[in-house]
Image (cartoon, rainbow, N blue to C red; front, side, top):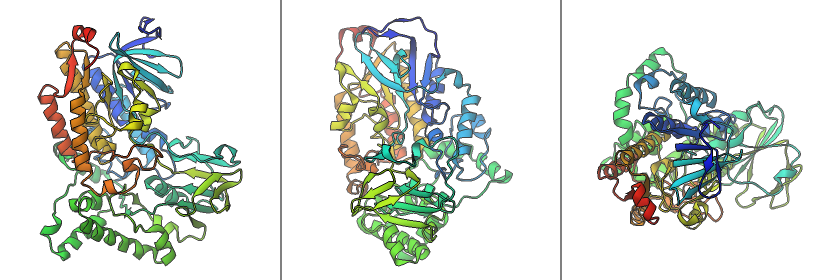
Length: 557
């Protein structure tokens, strides 16, 4: 254990091996910052991560082609100018190795490693109603007693989808989210990639020229935006670093936490001017077309249809072949209602003679066999390597894979299997002193530059705990009324969007049996921050807090 606390009994027979004021699960972007902030206010804190190193998502996602699609200079912590300016990026959208090095730089600069227990999986976390504290158990047999539990597990960290027969495959099989650290030899091999979302696209475009033959199993075509990724020289680095103050002022208040924001209204422009705006956004080679062209694309079917056709036109110009157009260009949903990937010559990869599309919408994958992948029509596609780019149980999966139990022994996994609910994505009614980041019903669940949103959530959590300590309070939990109100507000906004009308992982549609709800708050990053700030300014209205004496006499909030 990282802490040699006196051993004691946890109140339910558990033999406690360590005691902390706060335990943080995860050592990625949110977890590192939470550890830093809570430690700075004088708490005894430890972070736990299953990986052997820091990075979270950026430790595990080391598949071929993994890289940012947020500009590197805004995917950064903004709480310290010294920390920000102490790191220089080599290009606009750097790859995973450089991102992992950056997060190691953060951990070292802030001296965080001494309070992180690596290579440790959290099995369970149970709220002890007698002590009003959490008992956290790990696969190593540790039992940790903590007042506060802060989950920073990531919203895309629980790999999803397995196929019957995977264990029988005689070749190599990898999920992109658990790619091995040692190199995988793909040269000359028969490789199958299942999935063509943002991750699948990065893999496909990267390995197409290396493998012997590539079969891409596609169910749903994706709209794409071509990435422009210039290398950075000293002048470029100095230019973005000079904007630190303006970034701190602007990013927290835009719609998605990026530097750009919606500046035009569709109705206010002529058709010619609309086209100019779309073209300028497209030419930027970033996510600008999606999250900075016209907000109406999320709400107005006619506007969305016109922008969708603009993107289809651009894709047709590059594909040329009618069969490829049919297989790779979406027609049954609108641009921006799914996650929009950036790509680098992804479409051109399908012009290669060694790349083949296998459509699996009407002929789905049935199983994995010793030789390869079998589709419903009985065809066996013989392969040496299978790559699962099949996505995640987004938002909820990382926590439902831990046995989290709140008041009365209620199970978070069971609660969320019936109805996915949170209070502002920060706490869940029935789970006192459990704070959450990157879970549903907040922008950080999907529609946000992640560092912008995760910093904001960590700072709110830190502020809440500071407030409690200043008032000698030790238990906090959202009331049922507050949670009901937030869920209703979230749904009202989400259901007005076209996102709610489109099947995707944004609604959990990729996970069989998962309750249908738009996972991310769609009201905008700036609006969400304002609402969180208002709650805090009003003494954490809607969050019931108790002193030790009050908590001892009343278990139900």
